[in-house]
Length: 104
Image 1 (cartoon, rainbow, N blue to C red):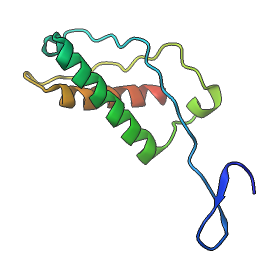
Image 2 (cartoon, rainbow, N blue to C red):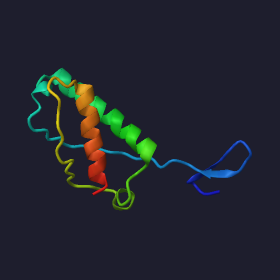
Image 3 (cartoon, helix red, strand yellow):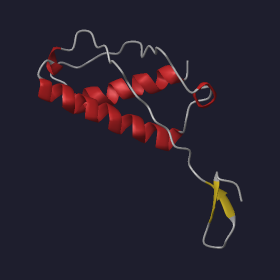
C-alpha cells in the first residue's frame, strides 16, 4: 500500500486526499471601503479562508496548480460588489475569484 492510500473498512486501499497549504502573503483589494476597520479585515480574511477550503475540498486542486506548487502572483480579476456587502459575502466573492484565477 502506498503513502497516498489508506485501507477502508474492508481492507481495500483507497486514495487519500492530498494536503494543500495556501499562503496568501498580500491580498490587494481596490475600492472596498467596507473593510477599512481591522475587525472587518479579519472577518474578511476568515471568510476567504473558509471559502477557499470549501472550494478545494468540493472541486479539488485545479489542474496545473498541483504540478507547479508555487504561484508567485495571481490575478482574481474583478467582480461587482453590492453596496453594504458584509465581510462574509465579500470573502466568498474573493475566494471564488482566487479559485478561478488558479485555473488560468
